[in-house]
Length: 366
Image 1 (cartoon, rainbow, N blue to C red):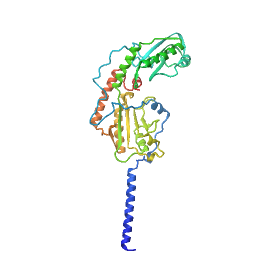
Image 2: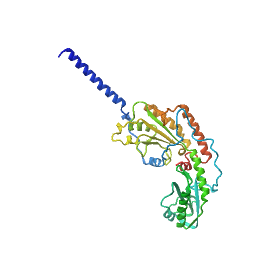
Image 3: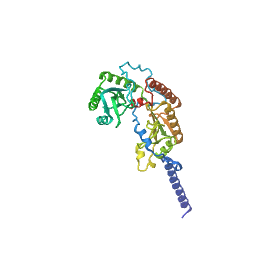
Image 4: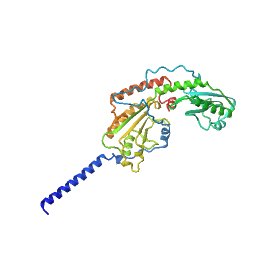
């Protein structure tokens, strides 16, 4: 074999090795990032987290989402006219029902009714159309309004239906269904109901729905990978360091509230199919979203600041960039403007006795 043949063979071998090495390096560089094996244990979802996820409202496509780094839209219209003076029941808040957001039909009794009888008389479904219906009794011993309890006795009842929620305002058909259910319950407990005027209540529902629609805000940031994609485990590990825990839906994590049973402060979601893949380590995730349902979370929790800090921390640790849904990078000036708008929104909700995170706000914006 000539020296030229030997040289060509060596050169060919070196070229082949270089190609193989380059391909291996490229494959490694482009492979989804994996969690650190030294700290890959994820927090387990315990029973205490389940109620929080159960109460989590579904995020809809909302006009108040961030729409661009250079063009920040106000979260609500500060010039919206003041609510009209529609008839509002004079009764003060009693039990879980509230005349601010509920139609309330009192039921008078000739004597006392047992909790067992009231429970047996409850309607099969506690909804009128898309609106929740609730029944409460005035406890003979405590003098408090409460859902019927076995073994207790009640001197009166009240049935309520919500005036509005995120599906819209109470309409005439829903009001009629409410009347039918309330009347059937009253008949079963030998009570006499008193129903407010339907047209007045429907008008109140429309006004409340207009206010709620104009002051609803569901924010969402998108974190996009700059270079290498992420595996589900890598995302979960980095998010868990910030306090996020696995949700009930694959590809979903939540930052739980301090008080059990309250909605989560923030949500984090990525591709469900990637989370359900046979080999999640090979699933490539190039973006995730961090969301805040503003009316559901108390402003004292500082949810927007925590949302902003979480997005910045994940972007730093995962080599990502925070953008809006259009892929435009969100600059600090835009974040600051959103924060100012949010404070104004909080003040408006407070003035209407619908403070963010309050039981009434959580019911209305649901």
